[in-house]
Image (cartoon, rainbow, N blue to C red; front, side):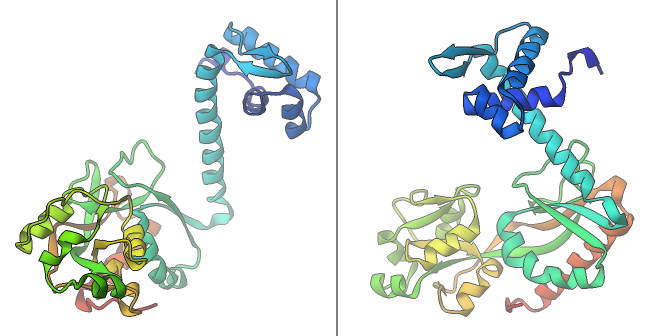
Length: 306
């Protein structure tokens, strides 16, 4: 590492604060320094990088073009350092720690209600959650496991099957009554709630139901199934959601399942972990627990409240 190119962290934080406030005095107040101290740090940083980072405009300091480019990298570095420090702190006290990448709706609707059982069995384990929608390189990220929807293919990792998926059309009882949604053909006059990461979902379901629709790709788009379930419950349209992720709304009557025409997805849910961590204590404990919990789900497909 070329240390002569590494500015002191306090200098970088002063630069970031001054850029954010467009003021040396406000940056100084935030960092509990004098304005002169911040000004000296910025001047030393400009000498080190060899460019002017700020220019004075009336009562403000404004980033130069070079300063804006530098700021983008500095913010990423400071955030990465903060994240790394927080991750290191989770390993303190001798407690086990797992870094788990999750799909948001799966985590909220399925995993969280069941997680107290795992923590009761392994009370010394702390689980930290991050959101990941797509596969990533375990070697490049400090993560131990991931919940994955797709094919059982992940380079350098082991995929353990959790469950298959059926998607079903749902809407609010009021919307069903208002539009007389008794057959798939009636969907022609109703907004279709779209899942942005699965743009072909409605066209595939309509083909299965042998129903035509002028705009299978049109309608409000949402990134998460939980948002689609809430939007459908609010009467914004008809959504296609995995049945096991909408169980609460169906059970309490906020959503109704339409047409008795479920569609089995070609892909499935998996728990994924690096090959290098196979057999390690906390990872193995979590994998065995979640596979068993999913097996119980498969034996009893009715989603029960926890």
